[in-house]
Amino acid sequence: MTSPPSRLVGAHEIRLRLGLSRQRVQQLTHFSTFPKPIAELEQGKVWRSEDIEAWILAHRPKDRRAADKAG
Image (cartoon, rainbow, N blue to C red; front, side):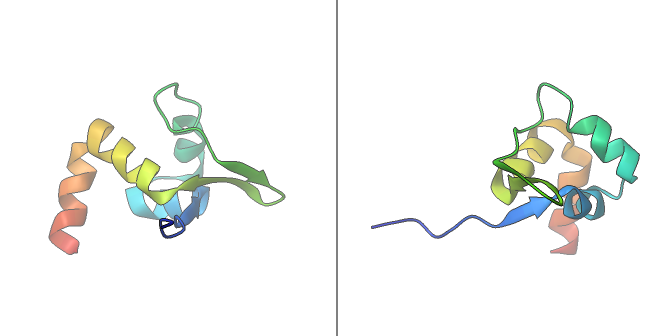
């Protein structure tokens, strides 16, 4: 049995999720703790959404709590 495909997100979705500027997201993606992208397409890098959510939970708990209240 195979698992369902992962949802992919780009820098724009990460920016919206965290409420940050494009430049700040670019900085975050260079941190050694930030998940590695699974692919680099013509329009930019993409990450698995579950990898990004796990990173948020570990490194930005304030943003995780805000998402829990909204969802």
